[in-house]
Length: 506
Ligand code: CA
Image (cartoon, rainbow, N blue to C red; front, side, top):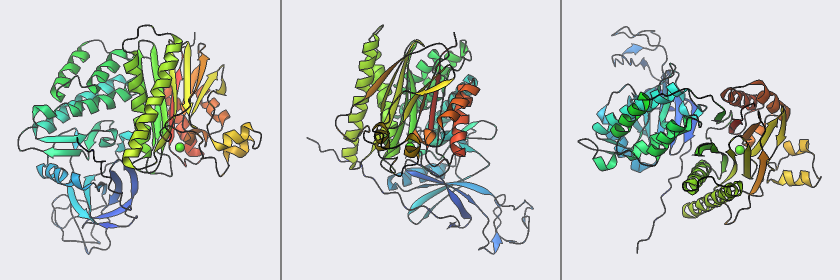
């Protein structure tokens, strides 16, 4: 018998405050984002504490502070900015350093220019030219962007493997969006570096991760492409090369730009550096789609894990149950939704016991069939709304203390909104063994919209403003962006996640 050790969690070190001097060249402007196992800082090389300026062009360190250009090569010495990634998981240090030593160059990869230790953490530096994080992108992307990104990423993964670099994971946090719209890999999580190419047996896992990323940005109605990435996610391709070749075949066919009826976006907000929300969508059968929004809790390495696990589990369970179920009845769909919630609940509960933390998540899901039926299910205070004939209706009921007090007429809706205990939830996914789920049936009419969101949206934006935005923008990608903008305008104190589902208007 083997005893399974729980994975070791190394606590996240305190962040470097703004102004911290790192290594010889960098001054921290601020922490811009936390992601699993890493902190991203923006830094510059404006260092009045140093008597000379460093030239990044020729490496000369002799230019006096007052001079504007390098005394040796004449290059402009205006301040430069950098993205510094800090990792504290010690097991990742050695492989990452081996990757750095290779100094690989590829158009799809931003290689680090500097690597050093400070206060026991490993700092990796890349020049910053105004790129943004792919984490902040809305979905879906245009089909041409999806295909371009998939091809480029497959080529880049094949290049890394040919050079002996095996990744531990590949996620959206590993991609930057350049100002010209191109996506580049940065700060990869390296598992191992080989002298020769990565052995064949280890070439498929990165393709599975890439498939999951790509599916998230693919319009859920583009069934062929969605299923192609789904197959990759489920391990159909043994290497990036095999994936790339199959992608070529797919591209040789007719890839049309589908009309976009669904949009989604998750935003970190204005006050936090970690996004613990998540969302997902999946085509279960032609005409049957599942949409999910989750808002995780339990602190770092818990909340964002719980919400991601919930979304992935729900989608996976629903897909498995639907696989051999031609033409399921509406009641069967309801059962599947219930079972998917229960499985997500137990999966998170098991994981939280292993990790010794108190992770949990809210969940709201919509299972939509043939644009005629929506089953909306929820636990917690992430919400499902219906927009019909331009009027917004809340479908789900919050499982929160203040919502109960409103139901008991002890608070008004307006008082509830600003109540100091508005964040206390009475039901969540992953905290107890059994969880009760509310399921609401909505018979859809042409032109209806279903809107799922986390409390970072409805806590900052009044219903009448949500209604106005949903009515005003016909493209769900635009309404998602405008809703996030409205939440920022309201304060942006929490993570914001929105998912808009439109039905054709007759
Ligand atoms: Ca929240």
